[in-house]
Image 1: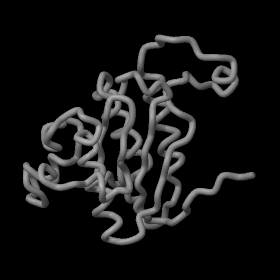
Image 2: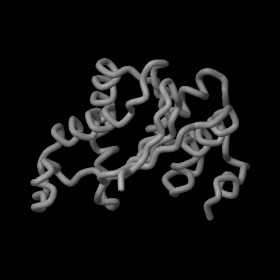
Image 3: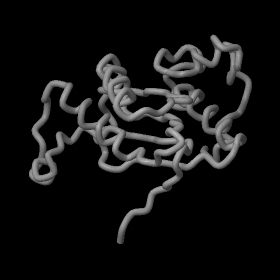
Length: 175
């Protein structure tokens, strides 16, 4: 059975991408490398990052692709491969990973969701920005350094105290 992905040129997509080892903090330890990899990928395969948060072992983001392009999977392949090549080898890959020329850093799949409308977009941006609070890294979303929330605050779209008094967990179907 073939796994089906959304295929909408110019679409906006929400993604969750995880490290294979959920106990590592590689993404924030290697944040400069991650930023560089994203920048180089965007230069070759343009896309807009509408919102993003990087946590120690996973990230969430919303991308909007160019009007004539629906291929987000090539971008993720490039990002994951370049990031993996850029970090020091720490643990040996197993036979399956060696066969696939993988380092065992990322989970093979990722979650994607095609954004359907403005409300869907807003709810996913809120989810992204609230995620460091949800996971207990900070008590205020604006205190997490690896988040696009700072761009939203600078632009005046939200206040620096956004999310403190709201019950976002109930709004996302999570407990």
